[in-house]
Amino acid sequence: MKKIFLGMMVCLLFISGVCAKPKKNVKADLEKTKFTIGHLNSTAHLLAFVAQEEGFFKEEGLSATLLQFASASELAAGLESGKLDVAFIGSVPSITFQSNGRDLTIFGGAMTNGHGYVIKKQFTGGKDNLGVEILKGRNVASVKNSVQDAELLLLLRNAGIKVGKGADEVNIVYFDSQKDAYAALQNSSIDAASAYSPYTSLAKGQGYNVVYYCSDVPALENQPCCRQVAYTPALNASPKSYKAFERALIKAYKFSQENRAKTIKDVKKYIDIDPDYINTEVYGGFSSSVPDPDKQGTINLKNTIVELGYTKDYDIEKGFNTSVYKEALESLIAENPKDKIYAELKAHFDKYE
Image (cartoon, rainbow, N blue to C red):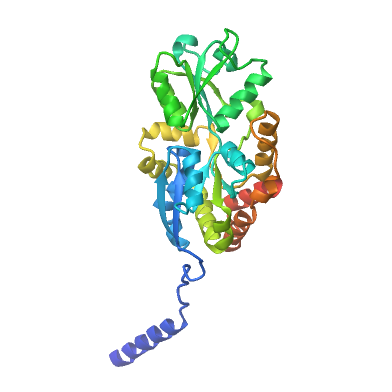
């Protein structure tokens, strides 16, 4: 009996070995597997952090390296030089770079809203959300060619407030990066500063007050901020690899919606601040990190900054690719047809493509 039993086990093992499906080599179909991703010192770029820490890049056959940069200009230069394959760049600089003829393509999203301005409490009586009127007669640190700057100019125009050094005007002092603009608050000559995630939470923790969150201003509702950007020839040369990258980010978004504690831990590895600040910035309702390219929102923003005279008009269609995201999302839905988060992403994409 023992010999018969052993014989049956050997046969079963042999059959299972023959019938088992070979594990798919996801790298085999990719044009390239090494991907270098540029990001800023911002919790807004959590999709890349989560995709790396939770192994989603690896699942998609990519060997990813994440590099932090100080400004949009550095990120764009990294793409053009081949140092970077993808960069998370603010929507306004992405648009102005394209307007100036730089061969960059927007193909996905990274964050919506998540920025505003902060001010020293001596001007507010310790109150938040007093609006741009509180900036009259103040020196305000900002970053040229940024969504924060464009938004401020729009709100000042809507409020009938001019830029200048008068008592009823706002004097904008420009710095090279958000980090530098925020640090300028330490100077007695600077009264307020722009702030994107997580600088607003850091500012509140250090005793400053919020002038406004863009998410609370109707004129700035659902404002697309950082976009996924690639050098156009690189994107065209490796469509399968960029689709794999996008699949990893979509998986990361799903994970961030279902695993708050672990997402905060993943973000902290790259943005080393108090976890409570990360929680506020990511889950506090001031921003959302979604991979959707949000084409219509970005086009609306382009039209707004052209109207402001921020940049010249151009055909944004030539620098916009929605097929990478669409194909990546559809492939994940095909694999997970009952997933509610993927279905919600598809509904949003279909509405705003």
